[in-house]
Each structure stands twice: as structure tokens, then as C-alpha cells.
Image: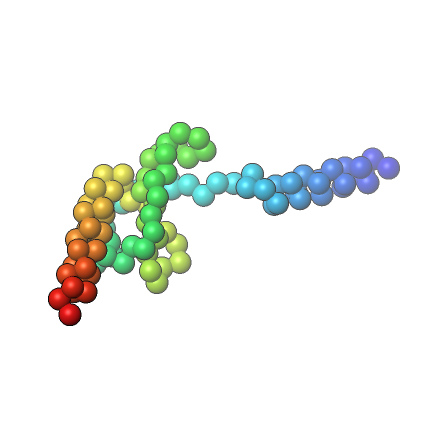
Length: 99
């Protein structure tokens, strides 16, 4: 009887963890500061990982086209990434208006 109760409790805990986002968080352990410009141009999505909460270090998580795993960049790269995205956007607008 005790084994059945323990099994049911284990199943319920597993169900609770998998059905919610109470699993193990995916955090950057280290960051890179030397990311090539060509790779930064392919970034299609990014967000900041705060050092508070489950993750220990602040990081800029970059999702690059054609890459399965995100890149963990130093938070100082955020300024360069924003500037690069603005330049790319302006160039696309210029190309659209020139035609």
C-alpha cells in the first residue's frame, strides 16, 4: 500500500512539473564578448537574462537564424546590437523608398 501511494505522489509531482513552467530554467553560465559582426546581423530575436532569480549572471541571449542554440553575450553587447538593428532597418527603408 505504501508503494502505491508513493508512486501516485511521484506521478502527480511529475505531472505538475511538466505541465507548468516549474522545470529547470535555462540560464547562461558564461558570456561571450567577441561576436562577429556578420553573426550579429543574423540575430532575429534577443532578450536580457537578469541576474536576479534563478540565473546567476546577467546576459544578453541572442537567437540567430540558422542556429539551434542561442548565444549568450555580455550585456554590453546590447548597445551594439540595437545600433546595428537600427542601421539595418534604415537601410531597408532607404532601399524601399529608392525603388
